[in-house]
Amino acid sequence: MAPRDYIIHPSEYDLDKVIADIHEIRRWNMQRFEMEQLTAIVHEDQSRCLCVGYKDVTRDEFWIRGHFPVMPLMPGVMMCEAAAQLSSYFTQKHNLLDAKLVGFGGMEDVRFREPVVPGDRLVITVERVRVRPRAMIVCRFQGLVRENIVVDGVIKGVPLPVDALAQATGGAAGG
Image (cartoon, rainbow, N blue to C red; front, side, top):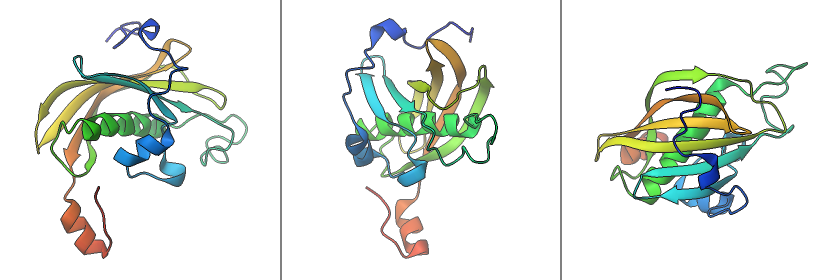
């Protein structure tokens, strides 16, 4: 994928028109507290099977203290987590995988192109490539800061065995 080959051009969505805030995101995603890596959803296109959201990177992020103290850089794994959460949100909301809970299934061809720092807005786009209900969803993703692609790749989601996990932990998982 060429660095300027957008999944969706930034002119096609409006970052000021939030269609799902953190409360709506929580209806579909289970992450909470410091693991919430989405601030808002701003665009959904079911016909193209794509979604756009963002993460406002603040000085209060849990990783600031250690990655790196004199020059904080958003860890690549957190950028990938943001993409996974956006993919999970869209997958769950539109029941694309027919699963109670979607988990990480893998990643391919991930490239980190530029650093992301506190004060940046990381705009994430995911687009479904293929899906096998109850087995796996594959999406390509991009992260942009000021229209520059800073990360891209392919992410896979798989259904998690919610009932077995709840029994093993003694909790009530699922949604």
